[in-house]
Amino acid sequence: MIKRTELRNENEPEDIYSEIYFLINENQDLWQAAGASLGLAGGFLSPLAGIVLSLIAWNIASENLKLFLNEGSAVLFVISLPLYFLGAHYLDLIEEKALEDFLPDKAL
Image 1 (tube, rainbow, N blue to C red):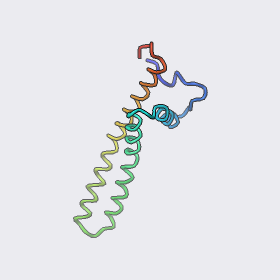
Image 2: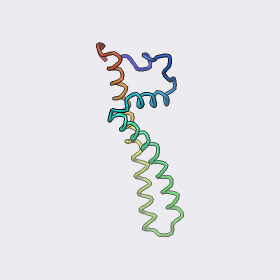
Image 3: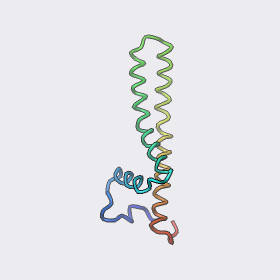
Image 4: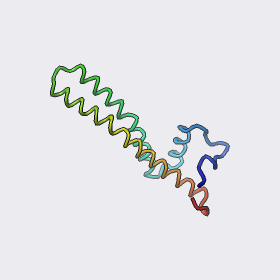
């Protein structure tokens, strides 16, 4: 199986973050680009929001609200991994489509 990194042009980026940015911007009309962006951004931002909820819960005296905020922060921490997996899956779909466009007659 041919990897995208083996088909690099001289003007394409070398590091992984530039590769992700390049793939998403190259295929802006695809719904996979939106899924990849939302999955990776949500996977990054949900633990940060969970940390904020935990910090707020530590400073609140009400036990009912503290329980609610702690549960919310736990959910945000747990949901980050599925969001990362979803974003990675959509990136794989984008890369597969880019390879098909680049090598339409070759079997992947």
